[in-house]
Amino acid sequence: MAKTRELCKDIRERIVDLYKAGMGNRTIGKQLGEKATNVGAIIREWKKFKMTVNFPRSGDPCKISPHGASMIRTTPQDLVNDLKRAGTTISMKTFSNTIRHHGFKSCIARKVPLLKPAHVQARQSFASDHLDDPEGEWEKVMWSDQTKVESYSLNSTRRVWRKKDEYNPKNTIPTVKHGGGNIILWGYFSAKGTGRMHRIEGRMDGAMYREILSNNLLPSVGSLNMGRGWVCQHDNDPKHTARATKGWLLKKHLKVLDWPSQSPDLNPIENLWRELKVCIDQQQPRNLKDLEKVCMEEGAKIPAEVCANLVKNYRKCMISVSATKGCSSKY
Image 1: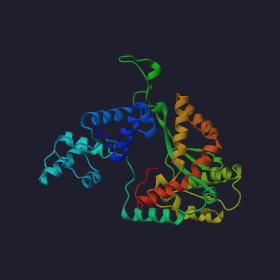
Image 2: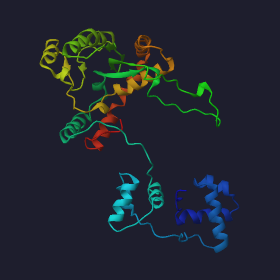
Image 3: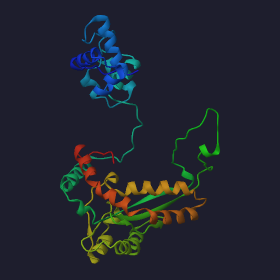
Image 4: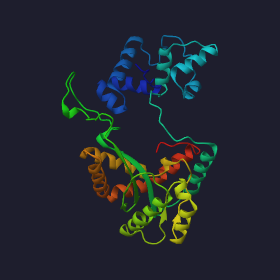
């Protein structure tokens, strides 16, 4: 059990004063914002010792200092071994109790793109340059990227309530041997809604990408009434930065957002893909043709309010990247 928070002397004295005034434990706790059980423990100590000070707790002093605990960013066993080599021997139990007391919990390490120093610097510069941009500037951006959509919810997880040894079909996720296949989609969205999606078949090259720009990007801009001054966003994939693609964009007089490499967390379309995949999971398409149809239908149904909200909160992403000095953010 984690160590409980100590109450300060003033709070303990107020609890005793209110008890003397005839109040019950629950009433005192509600008034002071403390648990009734903590209030009762303090009153019992006061009755027994006629004192409200915090008594010393039993046990050895903590071998991990608060500063040391704040620097924990590794596996428990690695840290235990490091401390042992430095002359401090602790058990795994001591380690677990200490890090829980300081607010840490065991988590699965997130997988993020490898960031080299040049990537970190570019991301930090991007966040600094756009940190104070008004919300209206981001509303002019047409965001884009590709995603892989799998059939039979191969990568989805779901929590259910069931009794022990009860296996109701409603509490399961169906899978198929060797997988149900997948499709690759390219899509667009802005604060005004989703644009046209395109299924990529085979390997996409520069020519295919320019065809997508012509047949999907430009019609999407028109259908969403982006008006003048809109900005195209895409990453630094070689197909996007090829001379022929740059020439096509220049010929069409399209402005492109200067984008830092290795930065999928800066693209709000990743959140839109998550929204789409949740909707697709509910439909449970049975084959790839059905999957493509469902993707197109559900993508068009995503409310414009969802898109607008993603763009509205984009400044929080800039703040997060600035706080990490260009490293991966929580987004």
